[in-house]
Length: 119
Image (cartoon, rainbow, N blue to C red):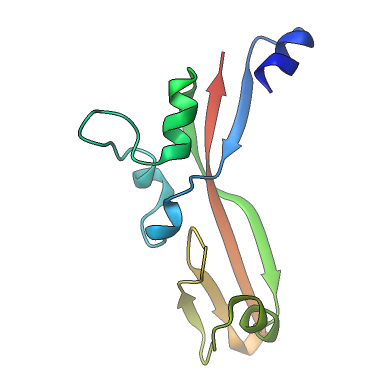
């Protein structure tokens, strides 16, 4: 992407990055998760760490980078979970909880990302 941007005469690339290990910490807000560091000072998340090693800078959290909605039955099928009441659920592979409103027959999942800038 950096090469394509350079070829197009652009000075930088800004991209939303999906942290690969965030799914292990779905209850932790992305704003905190993106600041976590290993003892050597590098980013805890390997995908953020890879981008930083390539010279990227963390700009900001994108707490609702992508929103997915579906009926309760759809979310039960997609996740393999039974969602018996309204509330928040940790879902397989999810970076944040799924919010279920049974009276509205609606599940809403907002996936966070991290904005990174490559010079």
